[in-house]
Image (tube, rainbow over all chains, first blue to last red; front, top):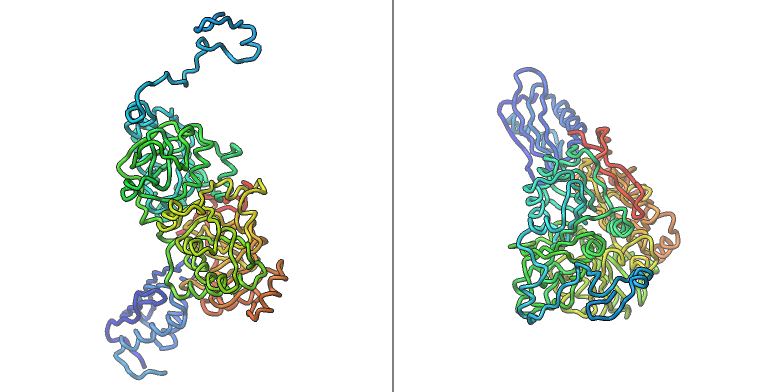
Length: 95
Length: 519
């Protein structure tokens, strides 16, 4: 069972990447603050992918600050997962 | 009545013929005989005025008039901002600015629009902060976008009447014989050469008043001139008119991007096997890294097959100049230079000629050079499954480009090749519908992306030839789906109800509308 212990980040601000910062939310809700170079076209989808990825990992309470530079969905998933494992100080990767 | 020489000239015959009587009916434009030697006269009795302000007064600028500029310095232009600052200071209002194009450097126009100095804009394109603000509804009236050929034709037809043209010229003599290059070898190093003044020539020809704005006055005669002194009202010397090093910025850069080069190489293969790659052909490449780079990949095959081109047209680059100097392109027909090498070639090479916007691209005359064009390679921000191309608004709906000669040459050429990456960042470039139609898809024959080639169904014979040459050809819908598979289907953009831009076709009719963006 993953549990956020500390604030952690993953990804970069390079073109085609997304920078994810994640920290614990005291309430069991996911709050996402997204800025993206493709906000109008893909902002909704990126938010949805972040939510889905957190949900798959069983993370309920989290505050996510995401800075997107046009990352593909697979990149978004990878960065979110990495940030979560780092925040949970876990190396029990399920991949 | 006796004329001053003492011969009897009956008034009746003078009136009947409408000729007037010598020495009696004097035309104020005729100068008195000036016996000062040329070397003095060129400085004492000339068209030079002291300041931009004086030029504006002499030309009789009034509220509501149309003033024009050219964009031959692209991002390096310093003329428009200088002139507009003086006009604003003098308190004029409600002007129409008709520049051959606008770039990021023209952001100071925002303040002039807010303060009511500028009410209307006509241009080929718009970039940077000014474009952002226009997309967000800065102006009451929509910006009219015209292609280069469309603008020249509208000026010649009087549909775009220019009251005063302020034309930056790298050098001019004191009578307004003005050029984009400097033939005076002693002065060359000091001159900011932009090369061809092709777009400005049309303004000079048709504007009521013409102000040459220059930073370099050369000795009379500036004999090989873009703009003839007889078209010029006055000449103003300023400290600087432009930075030529910024001509080759952005859209006209020399690319090293491997994906651009891959697209260019692929486009060259399409051209070589299209049926139009023949001895005596003619070719043009538009702005954009991949488009301009196509030339590099044609040279070897031209040499191998003993093919030379009769002419290359349009925006000329250093790449084109190399082919010209190797004898592969006989004539360079130059309306605009995309880098300083091309500008220097215009001065140096006798086969490199300046052409004005009308001869280049008017849609109303079969003699316009683009109607003699075999091959054109053009970029796109987006292309739809019907081959309609957008070069004006970005994926977020914000204005960020220019129509340029895109629709003019697409229609003029026998073979129109559109080059674009399949995706840029996460943005798919092949779409169901493009944001803004700048060029009617029926004139775009082949699409070349980094992933694959598609041929317009209107040109089955080209598809056959490419297939026969062993090239793989996709249906454009397949390319669209490949893009969406990688990046996902984008959400639809939201717009306001306000029309911020009107896109005209080369014949001046409305092709599409640009609506305000929602943040």
